[in-house]
Amino acid sequence: MIGNDLETARENLPSHVAIIMDGNGRWAEKRGLLRYFGHDAGMKAMTEIVRYASDMGIGYLSVYAFSTENWKRSEEEVSGIFKLLLIYVDKELDELHRNNCKVNILGDTTGMSRIVLKALEKVREKTKGNTGMIFNICLGYGGRAELARAARSLAGKVADGTIAPGEIDEDAITDALYTGGMPDPDLLIRPGGEKRLSNFMLWQCAYTEFVFCETLWPDFTKEDFDKAITEYEARKRRFGGRK
Ligand code: IPE
Ligand code: IPE
Ligand code: MG
Image 1 (cartoon, rainbow, N blue to C red):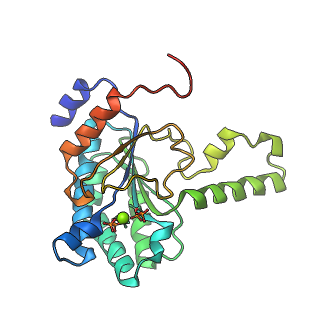
Image 2: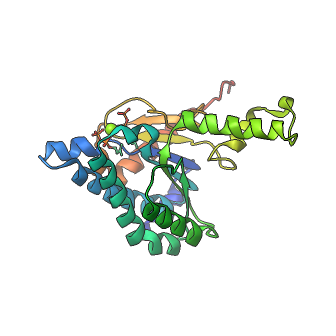
């Protein structure tokens, strides 16, 4: 098993890896194809990396699949992305389950069709008892919207007397996020050449290590994933303290 070999070879595997899967459109445009085919190729890359990360023993994998801002794209592109997501879920659910992965959908599902919501609920429900890798698919996700939602939830608790204003501390905010109960990402990988967060996990990435690469997401391979992990392992994390 390649995964087990890797696991024993690695000393300092990140517990939580996040990926901003970027570059699908450019990948397609370079080939004279419709953007849809870039998203299709991106789903294939995702399938491979999810499998690999799970075999490697990664505890949490979060992928940024569709942002709150991505709703600004054409209706044709958006519906293509959700159609591909349905195909992915339909094809991969059994394998994800066999691999003991627990799938969470993080984000605001407002605006998604009933058929998409039903498929997402099916994946969540089927894998909810699994104890292997936690696979977070961030969909309709935005870091600012997530923080605003957490603020509303905490304000509601203050209003109904469940908590006092003074109890709103960093832990309370952390717990009120979609990622409540999970560790912050140790490593964030952004393929596609852009060096920005694009509203991804703003709170959670306070001390995350970033690895950017030029490779467009559909071309991103297991070897690229390995390279990012190796780079992470060589980093010295200080969290503001001193060694
Ligand atoms: C990432 O690829 C996928 C989504 C944002 C849904 P893009 O579609 O952003 O690809 P580029 O950045 O235009 O190449
Ligand atoms: C970030 O990529 C969102 C996802 C990968 C889902 P974008 O392509 O939307 O980000 P910008 O517009 O380049 O910042
Ligand atoms: Mg992009």
